[in-house]
Image 1: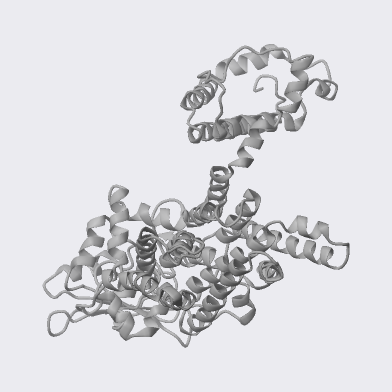
Image 2: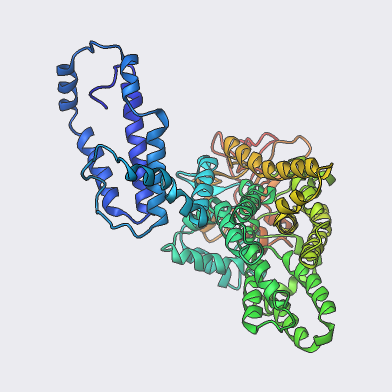
Length: 609
């Protein structure tokens, strides 16, 4: 191709070869075909490292004597190469009984004939059909590619910070010390109870060789594809149609709360998006709703309690939702109140006991249930239409009319004559979580509650859509068929439009990659002296509102937004960290040890001289 390509098209052909080779290599590695991946890389470097041969061959070729348009019918059509590549990658993912040749190079035949040609025509897309029967891995790869494109501004050097997320410590030991220490050097210092999500995040960071930054990147950037993957696999008992399950996974992955949590650095909601489908399935099993007349197993109860404990550590609002729904299950199982009462106590009591004493502070201050891991990052409250469309408000969290098709489809599911109990149960969960979202909207961000609300709506929609085509076809033509088509189109197009808009506009919002250092080095050095000076950082962009942070060291410590919410002096800036245009002149301590030094700034964020 490089020898025979025309001069103006040579850069395009070169780029096509490099990008195509890299994509095929990645596909072969994911499909566990390392031999073919090595062939791709070897062929690429063998070509690029010998430019002299390419130039000599182009010189010997000379100028063509025949117009390119006359030779075009002799080459394969434009889509033939793409189709062959897709089938080859699909075969690698799908597996089969074909023997492994170990390399993509082999004997090339001129083409089939006779019966072989008929067989090839029948089996032309057989591999793609096998993939369609098991679309889970392909769905995850597609969601991951969309997330990587959308998160292009969040990949690279520096630390993830902004919004509700502070820069993470350099290693896992910093997280363990902030969780285990009895005294926390945050703001003016104190003995506040450290949030338990620090220990969970430290344990996850240990899996990634102690890299807290990489663990945060995985949790945030991969939250969307992981949420879609868990939603797909746990929906198997709900419906048999893989197409409906794939749609449900995509719709859940791109709920406004999931994309908004990533844009604003809300780690709690991002973790909840991955765990919530698993919690829902375990909750159904623990409540005995799947077993007809049989008690639920204790194994399902303890699995539900464990997942609820993890989710409560990051987003406490799920615990009161589980409490209310558990009381509803007790009302349904009042004939066996003792057995299910013990299961209820185990499910909702385990998070309280395991997360104590931090969980006790939630019971004494109910408003703390509406907070989550990280800082209190304020956003404008969501409107009524946004909440109805599962939109919590804030950057990258648009809902409202975009997802109204899912709401209408969930309402239409109530008209189905079969599986009415499951559909009504999904609507009960939706209404309880919507009411919780209304309360959370007045106290902070309603993302976790709208995530539960959106998942319940999607479950009701899938239950109503299962077998809908046959039911509509058996009825005489009337107004129902056009209305059903419009609702189905709106429900299918909403998540796709949300995914496309998210991918084009990018996932970065207040969250960004930046230098974790917030103050100059000589100011941070003061905190290590005997005086233990802190730095009061003032900033903001409003003429009437000034944000502030009491910093020890070079930047606010992790868990500032959780361990010291009761101490207002520990609040960090609501946007990005102040940008220092010149070195500020701090005021040195004047009296006792621990007197904070002050680095002031005007309303534009510029430090005073």
